[in-house]
Every structure is written in structure tokens, then in C-alpha cells.
Amino acid sequence: MATTRTATTQWKGALIGGAGTVSLDTSGVGTYEVSWPSRAEAANGKTSPEELIAAAHSSCYSMALSHGLAGAGTPPETVQTVANVTFQPGEGITGITLSVKARVPGLTAEAFEAAAQDAKANCPVSKALAGVNITLEAELLS
Image (cartoon, rainbow, N blue to C red; front, side):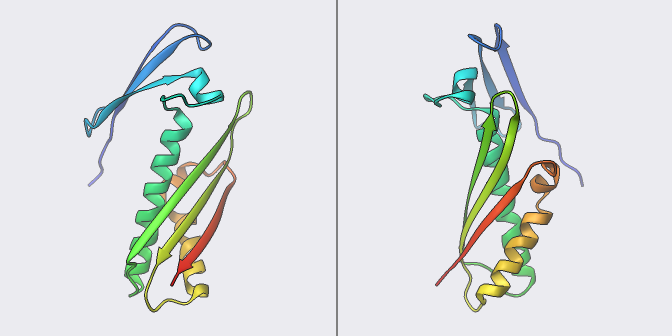
């Protein structure tokens, strides 16, 4: 069964000098301020499209890796993923780095690297961002 998730942004003014809010409508968990300076300079307590993409990518990737590992008979104890999304004004999103650390009993470093790479290639958010250079740093914790 397909699901649809909704967010709404209310923006006032021009790009430079304007500001807005983005609400996570489906979950209702919050409304967050956005502005050009929070996107192109310092966050200063506001979010940006790139931070929201980083949140989506890190959570999707963690789910995909956990699912793949469990399906292979080696469920993880923990998976922690950090997504760094780089934005260059005038160019757009120029790259994403996923850094994952996981504790997976009974798994070799080579098998973990293969599972981590597979999750990167097959996570739905990675697929949606196929035009962006996505790199992966994977560490198996003991």
C-alpha cells in the first residue's frame, strides 16, 4: 500500500530578506522557520531544505541498512547514520556524505561494507537523489 506524506511551506517576501515556515503536516510534529541566510550561511536556529534532506536521507539509509542486515540473518544492535548535505549557492546541492557506524554481532568488516554499499544504492531517498554525488563512510563497531 502506498503512503503519501505532506509538508507545507509558507513564505513571505523575496528570497533575500524573506522568510518562512515549513510544517510537517502528516506527523504534526512541528513547524520550523526557514530563510535564505539559514540556507546559505549560518543556521541561527532555523532549518533549510538541505537539513531536511539530510534528515530524510540519514533515517532512510539507517532503515535500509537495518533491513538488509536483518534479512541476511545478522540484525544490527545499533545503526547511527549522519548525512552531510553540501549546498553551494548558485549551484545547488553538490554532494552528500553518509557516515554510518553500526554494531552487528557476527558480521565481518567485508560483509558490513557490502551491506552498507547496497543500502546506499537501494535506499529510496538515495534513489530519489540519483543525480547527486553520494559518498559513504562505513564503520563496523566491535
